[in-house]
Amino acid sequence: MTNTDFSTNETPNYKLKEEYGEMTEKLTDHYKQIIKGLGEDVNREGIIKTPERVAKAMQFVTQGYDQDAVAILKSALFHEDHSEMIVVKDIEIYSLCEHHMLPFFGRAHVAYIPKGKITGLSKIARVVDVFARRLQVQERLTCQIRDAINEALDPLGVAVIVEAKHLCMMMRGVQKQNSATTTSAFVGEFEKQTTRAEFLNLVSSKLS
Ligand code: ZN
Image (cartoon, rainbow, N blue to C red; front, side):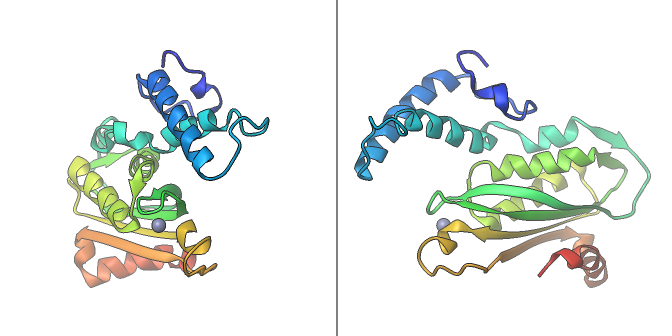
């Protein structure tokens, strides 16, 4: 956290890269070139600090690379005989598509059936952020959330649904303004029709 004033207005929970200062400088130079290449005057008053702002913003939204989802889940592990489905709905997702580096955003619904171990509910949301805050594709994001929970908790099953809108589709190319993409990943008990149906029913009011 040295050599940076970046953390002051941001979520305090997240550890920042130690090399933040040095890397920010390098990225700032690169963004200056990019903005110039796009046809802008980088010395214009409103733009002059933009390369540095973009560098810091991009480092923030890709900080998931430095975070360990399994360790986060294990940091709040409790022994519990409860073996009913635990569902966390409507977790906000903000990520960047790895093909265009434009945002995709939406919601994740996560469920698991514990086998003696549960984790703090907020940790599930943290894990979603860990994988969303990097260059992604929605399909892999969905599977990585499932796999981290499966590895850390060794539960009877995990289910993840992600529904998101992709700015690379909305702003360019096909320009489909209202299309949302839904992806899902299941393991264990959720591979059974009845368990999966119960989960889908619990979150279905949120699905279009
Ligand atoms: Zn894209």
